[in-house]
Each structure stands twice: as structure tokens, then as C-alpha cells.
Image (cartoon, rainbow over all chains, first blue to last red):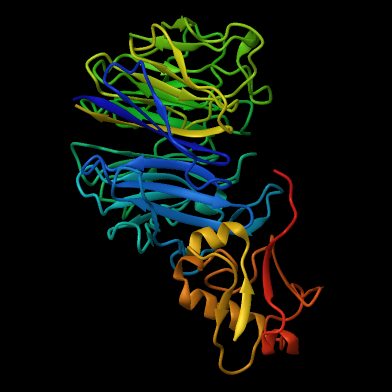
Length: 372
Length: 98
């Protein structure tokens, strides 16, 4: 029987939402890790019972939890994220050199083929890898050491490596994104990296709007059938690359605002993409108090507002970068969580929406596992 | 035997209820107590102090005998009442909103 499991990270715990393939009736779990921030949870594509979770707290720091039974039970694994060698410095807010300091894990990306291999994107920005199920972590230090690392400067949300995209056709290629440094690509399994920000323009944020690094990339999405096509939600601007990030062009088109955080791709239609426009970089809520997901069926530029079932008045929530996901059932499901604690689901590719749950703590991340 | 009281979140993490009792040889200091805790409960590594520098986390406090010992040297001897087991050593999450 088909079904879905939605993994929700919030400011005060994790919740697991489950349904059969019809996606009409949902079960909402009790909080896991109640009281802790769960920046991200994600299941292994190679073993859906294997789930990794980033658990952190201002009091007690960072933990990584692992479940081997689909989220019923958890065990803490390794939490020692030591930068490789002498960490060096990056730029601080005032432009002075500042030592790299571990703060938290923003994103966990399990390998597509090996349940014991998982990548972690951390703040201050660096990429770590574990090949033993999260017990030990090693930095892929070629990223920070590629040359521009000492120029990176945190955005208001911190200098976080928040996006990790694995190429399903090339095990040596992956993409990452950092706020506020930009997007980077490796073609040798993480040993060496280079910035891929050609075409990004940040006239309101950077003295050189076309700088090689420094752009505030919010999220990158890829459809597995076309790994050279990437979609990006930048601070402002929706961008598209058709050459694995070598160049980018803007596809914001007729959006009411092109600021936002998440972006995702339909499971079966590589040209169908979703964003949630947010009013501005300081007004982190939907324009006009109307929560609207926008869908493009043309890979950008032409967008339609999806409103059915979403609040169309007095709505002032935000949707964070890791808080949107799709399932891969025949009728693609789309999910997103808000800072107001709602998790909305659509079982018809965004045409209509219902709230699975309305009153969780602020939602930080949403991931979906599909069972066919 | 040194008696240690953990905050609720760390009790859950370590799967203990009530106080933890730790046999401790040698000097009884905050560093030695936390080190013994981490030895017995490896999942607590990094939650009370930094794993590399052993610096106490900013929002963790050490209390004993009605005093805040957080700013004492971690290598300073703990009060005799803690050494004898008459009083517990408290690991406390600092007051904070949110």
C-alpha cells in the first residue's frame, strides 16, 4: 500500500506526519526531542527506515540523532564537528577577520545509495561527511579552502551551509549553497570546489553586484531526471541554470515579489516548479497577507498563484528554505510548513491545499518520504 | 560518591531519572565531575562543555551548596560537602526565554 511520511523539524521538537497514498487522513506524532530545535530531518533514499535528525539547543549545543526504524526510536550518534586543521578566519560583520566557529547543523543530506553515508551542512559554513552512520564526521575542507573562504561574510541569519544537492547520475558531483557566499560545485566527490555564481546579480547587497562570491543564495532545487538543470531562490530573484550552474538567468517573470526562501520541483514534471513569494527581505511575510504558492509549468517566467485552501487574508507567516518538499506518488504531493506552525499539503500538485496540522511550533524544515 | 543532578533535557538524553552517582578518584573538581559524566554517558559529550576546549557552554551553569560555581576555575576543588556526597553538584540550564 502506498503512503507518505512527512518529517517536520520545528523550534521545539520534531513531528512525524503519516498518511496512506490518498493523503486525506493524517496521523500526527507526539513531539520527538521536545524542547529542542530540529533544524532538519531527512530519510535515506537507500533505506527509508534510516532517518537522520539535527537536534540543537542554545543551552546544550548540537546532537545528531539517528533512527533505524522509521522514526519510532532514536539514538544519538556523533556530534563532534571539528574543522579540519587550523580553521583560519572568515569576515565578520564589521569586515574584520573572525575565526571559524561551529554553531549548528542546518542540513543533513543522506547519500542516494548508502544509508551510512550522510553529509552535513553547518554554520559557520562548512561541509562534513560521515560514512559510518553519523558516528564520525570529517570536514570536506576543500570547500572552505578553495580560495574565497576568507572573504565569506555571514548574512543576518548566520553564515550557514544550508543546501546540499547530490547529482543522481554522477556520484562525484554535488552542489552546495551558503548564506551569504553563494553556490559552489564539486566534480570530484568534495575534494575540490569552485563558485558557480555567474549570472547572479545582487545590486542591493553587494558593492559589485556580479561578484564571484557573496551572493545570498537561499535554496537550490534539481529534478533527478535532469541534473544539469538547477533552480535557485536567491535572496531576491528566481534563477535557472541549464548547464550545471556554469551560468544562471533570471526567471522571476510575473511573480508579485521574487524574494523568498524555498523552491522545489514537481516529482514527475521537471519544468514544474514551486516558490512561496515573500514581501521583502525585512517583511518576512506574504504580500497582502495572502499565503500563495506560485507554480510555473514552464520552468520559470510564467507563474500562477495557487490559493485554494490557503489563507487569503491576515496571514503573516514565513516559509523557511528547508520547509518545502514533494512526494513522488502518481499525483505529486506538495508540502510546506510555516513559521506559524501550519503544515499544508496538496495531493494534486498544488491545485488545492489543506492543513495537515495547524498549531505546531514554528516550522524549520519539511521533508517527505514516499512509499509506493 | 559524587551526586550529580542533571537538567531535564540531559536526563532524557542520558536515559536517567533522579540523581547520578559517580565514583571519583583523585581531585574532585568540576572538570573531573563532568569528565566522569561524559565517560559514563558518552551522549552527553558536547552538551555541557566544548569537546575540544572543555570550555563550559555559555548557557550551562554549575551550582553547589547554594552557590554558583560556574565562573570558578574548572580545576578548582569543589566544596567538601560535594566531595563527601552530602550535597549534589548541579548542572543547570541557564535562565533564558524562548
